Length: 343
Ligand code: NAI
Image (cartoon, rainbow, N blue to C red):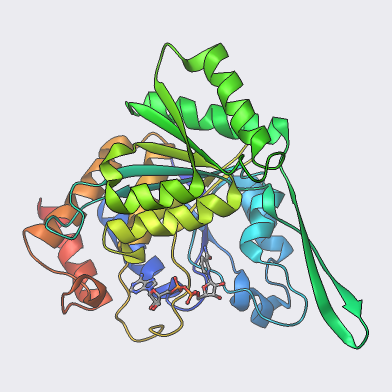
């Protein structure tokens, strides 16, 4: 009998439960050996346990070190911090890996195959923000402090180079704004250059680009890039931009990887506008599940899942509305499960 793999499952908010069910159907069809421990977080956590990140959920991930998670809403008001940010901090998930690969040919941009590696714990997302009151205006001045450390940059850049080399990539591009934010993003650039010289220059190419130029180049000629490595805020923005090149957020998976755990999710959010309507595209979460299968070295199952998605979209032409099709989540999932089972 094959080994079972304990893993935490967080269905999440909005379309989360719909796309998680669809993904579980695909994983079941593949006989993926996960033993799921279902937990709550986000708005669901607040409603059922009074906490967007209940202790039981944290304990479960601490035990399994592996999670598949639907999107989480951060309740506005009540002073809650984002559960996603808390999860990253709690398990030191310092690397956010977001691959973007064209699956449906013939779009505005064809044959895209890019990876964004985003630093996940530092930069301008550390939450050191406050207002200063002037006269009667409590929000007269807003201030934020970003923090990037040499050690934080080093572990992320090392992860990015090692991942790029292990997956046969040709070039790593460091994206920065060191011309203006000389300290905050200068330290990231400097660390990358120093590590490249010392450890990677004989194994892969590296170049550097300023974030604003990078955004323009991605729109004009995205094929010039391969692996983009950058700080937290720039990575957040660039990974959505890159998702747009391959047909939108419904196609973009993400992995949060760290020393203590790995959490797999879709890049998109809970899509409250379509929640409960049976229209959500589950592919982004399914591709996240494929990354999870790769992570636990079940690469044959990951490859079968990716091929079944490709065949369902391109041979069977079953597509959800966001991809111009007319299938709902269930019809797409049924077609995909048939592909997995029958080839
Ligand atoms: P969103 O990604 O949920 O939705 C943006 C647009 O894309 C909407 O029109 C939505 O209908 C569409 N969309 C997203 N995923 C789709 C899918 N799978 N199939 C078809 N259409 C899809 O972004 P929004 O509206 O800004 O955020 C909604 C909530 O999600 C917020 O509370 C936000 O904080 C949370 N969020 C959570 C994330 C996470 O848990 N990783 C990531 C991003 C947002």
